[in-house]
Image (cartoon, rainbow, N blue to C red; front, top):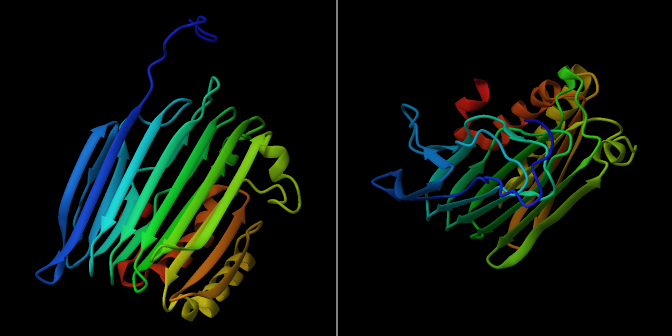
Length: 286
Protein backbone atom coordinates (compact mmCIF):
# COMPACT_ATOMS: atom_id res chain seq x y z
CA UNK A 1 0.00 0.00 0.00
CA UNK A 2 1.43 3.38 -1.01
CA UNK A 3 0.64 6.99 -0.20
CA UNK A 4 -0.05 8.70 3.13
CA UNK A 5 -1.42 6.69 6.05
CA UNK A 6 -5.15 6.85 6.88
CA UNK A 7 -6.25 9.81 8.97
CA UNK A 8 -5.79 9.12 12.66
CA UNK A 9 -3.38 6.25 12.09
CA UNK A 10 -0.78 5.87 14.84
CA UNK A 11 2.67 5.56 13.30
CA UNK A 12 5.58 3.83 14.95
CA UNK A 13 8.32 6.24 15.99
CA UNK A 14 11.89 5.72 17.10
CA UNK A 15 13.14 7.01 20.43
CA UNK A 16 16.02 6.39 22.76
CA UNK A 17 18.71 7.66 25.06
CA UNK A 18 22.42 7.03 25.24
CA UNK A 19 24.52 8.23 28.17
CA UNK A 20 28.26 7.81 28.52
CA UNK A 21 30.61 8.95 31.30
CA UNK A 22 34.37 8.50 31.50
CA UNK A 23 37.01 9.23 34.14
CA UNK A 24 40.78 9.14 34.45
CA UNK A 25 42.26 6.39 36.60
CA UNK A 26 45.67 4.69 36.70
CA UNK A 27 47.01 6.99 34.02
CA UNK A 28 44.34 6.36 31.40
CA UNK A 29 40.71 7.09 30.55
CA UNK A 30 38.24 4.47 31.76
CA UNK A 31 34.52 3.92 31.53
CA UNK A 32 32.60 5.39 34.48
CA UNK A 33 29.00 4.96 33.34
CA UNK A 34 27.01 3.64 30.38
CA UNK A 35 23.27 3.68 29.72
CA UNK A 36 21.48 2.63 26.53
CA UNK A 37 17.77 2.72 25.79
CA UNK A 38 15.64 2.14 22.71
CA UNK A 39 17.28 2.63 19.33
CA UNK A 40 20.51 4.05 20.73
CA UNK A 41 23.63 1.99 21.33
CA UNK A 42 27.20 2.95 22.28
CA UNK A 43 30.25 0.80 21.57
CA UNK A 44 33.79 1.36 22.88
CA UNK A 45 36.42 -0.19 20.58
CA UNK A 46 39.73 0.63 22.24
CA UNK A 47 42.52 1.35 19.72
CA UNK A 48 45.73 -0.45 20.61
CA UNK A 49 48.42 1.67 22.24
CA UNK A 50 46.16 4.59 23.15
CA UNK A 51 45.28 5.86 26.59
CA UNK A 52 42.10 7.67 25.67
CA UNK A 53 38.78 6.12 24.69
CA UNK A 54 36.86 6.17 21.43
CA UNK A 55 33.07 5.78 21.54
CA UNK A 56 30.90 4.89 18.56
CA UNK A 57 27.26 6.02 18.56
CA UNK A 58 24.75 3.79 16.78
CA UNK A 59 21.14 4.44 15.83
CA UNK A 60 19.75 0.94 15.28
CA UNK A 61 16.63 2.35 13.59
CA UNK A 62 18.75 2.99 10.49
CA UNK A 63 17.78 6.64 10.13
CA UNK A 64 15.38 9.32 11.33
CA UNK A 65 11.99 10.59 10.25
CA UNK A 66 9.35 12.94 11.60
CA UNK A 67 8.52 12.34 15.25
CA UNK A 68 11.70 10.42 16.13
CA UNK A 69 13.45 11.49 19.33
CA UNK A 70 17.09 10.75 20.17
CA UNK A 71 19.14 12.09 23.07
CA UNK A 72 22.87 11.65 23.65
CA UNK A 73 24.70 12.64 26.83
CA UNK A 74 28.48 12.52 27.26
CA UNK A 75 30.47 13.43 30.37
CA UNK A 76 34.27 13.56 30.47
CA UNK A 77 35.51 13.91 34.05
CA UNK A 78 38.68 15.71 35.12
CA UNK A 79 41.76 14.74 33.13
CA UNK A 80 40.00 12.23 30.87
CA UNK A 81 40.23 12.08 27.08
CA UNK A 82 37.41 10.86 24.84
CA UNK A 83 36.61 10.85 21.13
CA UNK A 84 33.00 10.31 20.07
CA UNK A 85 32.00 9.41 16.52
CA UNK A 86 29.15 7.58 14.77
CA UNK A 87 28.98 4.21 13.06
CA UNK A 88 27.77 5.74 9.79
CA UNK A 89 26.19 8.84 8.31
CA UNK A 90 22.83 9.65 9.90
CA UNK A 91 20.05 9.76 7.29
CA UNK A 92 16.96 11.90 7.80
CA UNK A 93 14.03 10.79 5.64
CA UNK A 94 10.87 12.52 4.42
CA UNK A 95 8.52 13.57 7.18
CA UNK A 96 4.73 13.57 7.19
CA UNK A 97 4.72 16.75 9.26
CA UNK A 98 6.63 16.55 12.53
CA UNK A 99 10.37 17.06 12.92
CA UNK A 100 12.93 14.50 14.03
CA UNK A 101 14.72 15.79 17.09
CA UNK A 102 18.27 14.98 18.16
CA UNK A 103 19.64 16.44 21.39
CA UNK A 104 23.27 16.13 22.46
CA UNK A 105 24.61 17.25 25.84
CA UNK A 106 28.33 17.39 26.56
CA UNK A 107 30.10 18.06 29.88
CA UNK A 108 33.86 18.47 30.40
CA UNK A 109 35.60 18.60 33.77
CA UNK A 110 38.94 20.33 34.53
CA UNK A 111 41.66 19.30 32.09
CA UNK A 112 39.34 17.01 30.13
CA UNK A 113 39.56 16.62 26.35
CA UNK A 114 36.51 15.69 24.26
CA UNK A 115 36.30 15.38 20.48
CA UNK A 116 32.71 15.21 19.17
CA UNK A 117 33.14 13.94 15.60
CA UNK A 118 29.99 12.25 14.24
CA UNK A 119 29.94 11.41 10.55
CA UNK A 120 27.80 13.46 8.18
CA UNK A 121 24.05 13.93 8.49
CA UNK A 122 22.26 13.41 5.14
CA UNK A 123 18.93 15.19 4.66
CA UNK A 124 16.49 13.91 2.04
CA UNK A 125 13.80 15.88 0.26
CA UNK A 126 10.87 16.56 2.60
CA UNK A 127 12.86 15.82 5.74
CA UNK A 128 12.56 17.86 8.91
CA UNK A 129 15.32 17.91 11.53
CA UNK A 130 15.66 19.86 14.77
CA UNK A 131 19.18 19.29 16.13
CA UNK A 132 20.46 20.81 19.36
CA UNK A 133 23.85 20.56 21.00
CA UNK A 134 24.86 22.01 24.36
CA UNK A 135 28.19 21.83 26.15
CA UNK A 136 29.41 22.96 29.57
CA UNK A 137 33.15 22.92 30.15
CA UNK A 138 35.82 23.89 32.67
CA UNK A 139 38.15 26.79 31.69
CA UNK A 140 41.13 24.50 31.04
CA UNK A 141 39.19 21.77 29.23
CA UNK A 142 39.53 21.17 25.47
CA UNK A 143 36.56 20.60 23.17
CA UNK A 144 36.41 19.89 19.43
CA UNK A 145 33.02 19.77 17.68
CA UNK A 146 32.53 18.87 14.02
CA UNK A 147 29.09 18.71 12.41
CA UNK A 148 28.75 18.13 8.66
CA UNK A 149 25.41 18.20 6.85
CA UNK A 150 24.60 17.10 3.31
CA UNK A 151 21.44 18.35 1.62
CA UNK A 152 20.81 15.35 -0.60
CA UNK A 153 23.40 13.18 -2.35
CA UNK A 154 24.81 15.03 -5.33
CA UNK A 155 25.99 11.85 -7.07
CA UNK A 156 22.37 10.70 -7.26
CA UNK A 157 21.03 14.05 -8.34
CA UNK A 158 19.14 14.59 -5.08
CA UNK A 159 18.09 18.00 -3.79
CA UNK A 160 16.13 19.13 -0.76
CA UNK A 161 13.50 21.29 -2.41
CA UNK A 162 11.20 21.14 0.62
CA UNK A 163 11.74 20.50 4.31
CA UNK A 164 13.27 22.09 7.37
CA UNK A 165 16.63 22.09 9.11
CA UNK A 166 17.24 23.74 12.45
CA UNK A 167 20.55 23.46 14.26
CA UNK A 168 21.42 25.19 17.52
CA UNK A 169 24.68 25.13 19.49
CA UNK A 170 25.16 26.45 23.03
CA UNK A 171 28.66 26.15 24.47
CA UNK A 172 29.47 27.60 27.89
CA UNK A 173 32.65 27.79 29.94
CA UNK A 174 32.26 27.92 33.72
CA UNK A 175 28.64 28.97 33.18
CA UNK A 176 29.49 31.82 30.78
CA UNK A 177 28.25 31.49 27.17
CA UNK A 178 31.18 31.52 24.74
CA UNK A 179 29.62 30.19 21.53
CA UNK A 180 25.95 30.36 20.59
CA UNK A 181 24.67 29.91 17.06
CA UNK A 182 21.47 28.90 15.31
CA UNK A 183 20.84 27.82 11.73
CA UNK A 184 17.34 27.71 10.30
CA UNK A 185 16.52 26.64 6.73
CA UNK A 186 12.75 26.23 6.52
CA UNK A 187 10.38 25.68 3.64
CA UNK A 188 12.69 25.51 0.64
CA UNK A 189 16.25 24.66 1.80
CA UNK A 190 17.69 24.36 -1.71
CA UNK A 191 16.43 27.79 -2.69
CA UNK A 192 18.07 29.24 0.42
CA UNK A 193 21.34 27.40 -0.23
CA UNK A 194 21.39 28.81 -3.77
CA UNK A 195 21.70 32.33 -2.40
CA UNK A 196 25.20 33.75 -2.74
CA UNK A 197 25.31 34.89 0.88
CA UNK A 198 24.24 31.45 2.18
CA UNK A 199 26.08 28.69 0.30
CA UNK A 200 26.25 29.85 -3.34
CA UNK A 201 24.52 26.67 -4.48
CA UNK A 202 26.75 24.28 -2.54
CA UNK A 203 24.88 21.53 -0.69
CA UNK A 204 27.53 20.13 1.68
CA UNK A 205 28.22 22.20 4.79
CA UNK A 206 30.43 21.74 7.85
CA UNK A 207 31.08 23.71 11.02
CA UNK A 208 34.19 23.06 13.10
CA UNK A 209 34.60 24.53 16.58
CA UNK A 210 37.61 24.07 18.83
CA UNK A 211 37.50 25.52 22.34
CA UNK A 212 40.72 25.44 24.35
CA UNK A 213 43.04 27.95 26.05
CA UNK A 214 45.52 27.52 23.16
CA UNK A 215 42.97 27.31 20.34
CA UNK A 216 44.32 30.37 18.50
CA UNK A 217 47.73 28.73 18.15
CA UNK A 218 46.32 26.57 15.34
CA UNK A 219 44.87 29.49 13.37
CA UNK A 220 47.64 29.91 10.79
CA UNK A 221 47.98 26.16 10.18
CA UNK A 222 44.20 25.75 9.86
CA UNK A 223 43.95 28.61 7.36
CA UNK A 224 46.77 27.10 5.32
CA UNK A 225 44.99 23.73 5.19
CA UNK A 226 41.73 25.32 4.06
CA UNK A 227 43.55 27.41 1.45
CA UNK A 228 45.30 24.32 0.08
CA UNK A 229 41.99 22.44 -0.03
CA UNK A 230 40.31 25.28 -1.93
CA UNK A 231 43.04 25.08 -4.57
CA UNK A 232 42.89 21.28 -4.82
CA UNK A 233 39.14 20.63 -4.63
CA UNK A 234 36.84 22.33 -7.19
CA UNK A 235 33.91 24.10 -5.58
CA UNK A 236 35.22 23.91 -2.02
CA UNK A 237 35.22 27.13 0.01
CA UNK A 238 35.94 27.88 3.63
CA UNK A 239 37.22 30.23 6.27
CA UNK A 240 38.78 30.09 9.74
CA UNK A 241 38.82 32.62 12.59
CA UNK A 242 39.96 32.59 16.22
CA UNK A 243 39.21 34.65 19.34
CA UNK A 244 40.16 34.86 22.97
CA UNK A 245 37.00 34.44 25.07
CA UNK A 246 37.31 34.98 28.82
CA UNK A 247 39.57 32.31 30.34
CA UNK A 248 39.79 30.27 27.14
CA UNK A 249 39.85 30.64 23.36
CA UNK A 250 37.97 29.35 20.36
CA UNK A 251 38.69 28.60 16.72
CA UNK A 252 35.79 28.44 14.28
CA UNK A 253 35.90 27.09 10.72
CA UNK A 254 33.18 26.82 8.08
CA UNK A 255 33.42 24.74 4.93
CA UNK A 256 31.03 24.43 1.98
CA UNK A 257 31.36 22.07 -0.99
CA UNK A 258 29.48 20.71 -3.97
CA UNK A 259 29.13 17.23 -2.47
CA UNK A 260 30.08 15.07 0.50
CA UNK A 261 33.25 13.67 -1.07
CA UNK A 262 34.63 17.14 -1.75
CA UNK A 263 33.68 18.25 1.76
CA UNK A 264 35.60 15.36 3.32
CA UNK A 265 38.71 16.23 1.33
CA UNK A 266 38.76 19.60 3.05
CA UNK A 267 37.39 18.51 6.40
CA UNK A 268 39.51 15.48 7.34
CA UNK A 269 42.92 17.25 7.24
CA UNK A 270 41.45 20.03 9.39
CA UNK A 271 40.06 17.50 11.86
CA UNK A 272 43.44 15.78 12.02
CA UNK A 273 45.18 19.06 12.86
CA UNK A 274 42.72 20.17 15.52
CA UNK A 275 42.21 16.76 17.15
CA UNK A 276 45.95 16.49 17.81
CA UNK A 277 47.01 13.21 19.39
CA UNK A 278 43.40 11.97 19.42
CA UNK A 279 43.50 11.78 15.61
CA UNK A 280 40.63 11.12 13.22
CA UNK A 281 38.33 8.23 14.26
CA UNK A 282 38.82 5.01 12.32
CA UNK A 283 35.12 5.02 11.40
CA UNK A 284 35.76 8.02 9.14
CA UNK A 285 38.05 5.89 6.99
CA UNK A 286 35.59 3.02 6.47
